[in-house]
Length: 197
Image 1 (cartoon, one colour):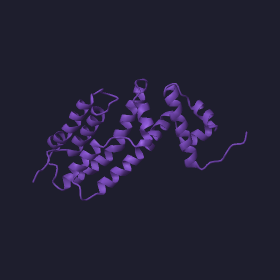
Image 2 (image 1 turned 120 degrees about the vertical axis):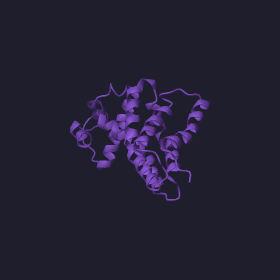
Image 3 (image 1 turned 180 degrees about the vertical axis):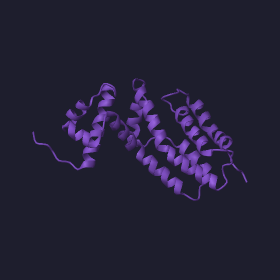
Image 4 (image 1 turned 90 degrees about the vertical axis):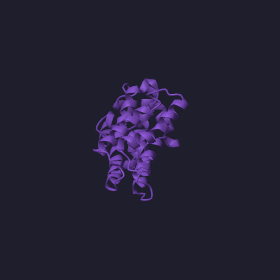
């Protein structure tokens, strides 16, 4: 059988897509690296050129899903017309996935994928943390946040919001979900001691 040569980024994305397809149909725990490479039609050596493990594949798939959101957040950080408080609120409120990522999110929220879902939340928190800290530093430098240790408090907020507003963790009704989302403004203000002057 003749192997088809593909550019590295294309091959990596192919492995990621097949892995997510198998995770979706069989479950993360039941999918092996050998099944992934067999379905892609490459050797295990090729797999290990791109990924160290099955967990590494999952992390990369999540990072790919997060990439567009992180790019938008980076633009938000650079926007000098919006204060740090508003930037934080936008990040916490605008956590809806892009249309092309909806299938991944739907899969992650299946009850049978609770382990995978928890890993996703942790990956998302770790990816967002440097951006949140940068925004808090901007706010602290401008005297907008008066709280002691605002970076730690923002980290606490991020972790709390990631779980609190995740419908795969809590089955809030639409009204309950909106009540919690709307309460974020006041929670951010109180926790970071917003300077209103």
